[in-house]
Amino acid sequence: MTTDLPARMLRLLSLLQTRREWSGAELAGRLGVTTRTIRRDIDRLRELGYPVEGTTGHAGGYRLASGTAMPPLILDDDEAIAIAVALRTAAGHLTGMEETSLRALAKLEQVLPVRLRTQVAALHQATATIGWERRGPRVDPATLSALAAACRDHETVAFDYTTRHGTTASRRVEPHHLVASSGLWYLLARDTERDDWRVFRLDRVTDPTPTRRRFVPGAVPGQDPAAYVARKIATAPVRHRALVTVHAPADTVRRRTGALADRVRPLDDTTCAVDCSGDSLSRIAQTLAAVDADYTLDADPEVTDHLHRTAERTRRALHTAVRTGGGPPKAPADHGPHG
Image 1 (cartoon, rainbow, N blue to C red):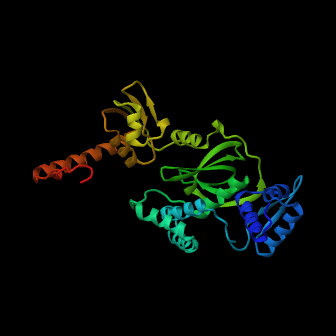
Image 2: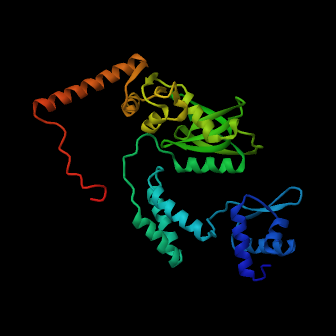
Image 3: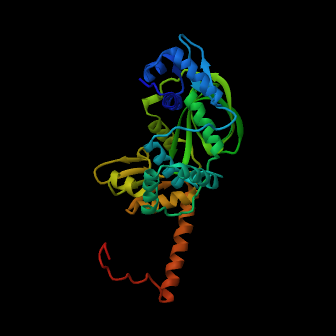
């Protein structure tokens, strides 16, 4: 039984922050007090500025709502370390979040206990990130946050969506899951007007607006959101068709190309069919180069033209290297993996 008032208040606040909604009886059972005491403690939290709302239903309940300011959060040790590391490593992955992430990290590290600050510092010192230039679109963090909240709260959301052809239309959906794949974010949602499941790229979503209309989430086809989105990505219409038969095992080609599993189909133990189709000619060429095995190609003319141009540039570069006496630089002496 939690008899110390400050400790009980902190425990109550921590519980409210871990779940969308609690009944008064559940909170009383967790804290070992009466529901009357819970009501008084909730009033104390409200006086301190925490926006605790009462909910309707069979027995009523409480939830921590969004307020006009960010209240203090209660984090356990593992949560604090996870947030600190995530803020450091994720900075730069979302548009406009680099400086904000570092400011938040500075605030968090300032109040971390010494034992946790030491652990976080050790992780930072022992790890490094290769700063490859990011390709492709990046997601607006406000869009990502709004859709994540809508998924959590089972709230219908409206937004404008730009298709791969450049046309824009208003959509109204029941959001279920956010899925990240190959540097892109996708929203898996049920389109209410089309009465069907749809996958939306978040970089093409603008102005997501909650409608305050709740829905009861249905079962995702196949029960696996990530697998469903992967299948949709693999079978989505693309600008350029490129199908190859590769003289290498399917598992080997998957490892070399990083292709989605549904895009590599084994024909026998030593041969597989690979769908390299896509919207980017250069990416198709990169995938074919990564195959690193003999293959036969069935592709649209613009794909073969691009490959011919690429091959011709390579041939000219090699010819120039031969005429000027160039070639690959000599490898340094191999002193083993440890120098």
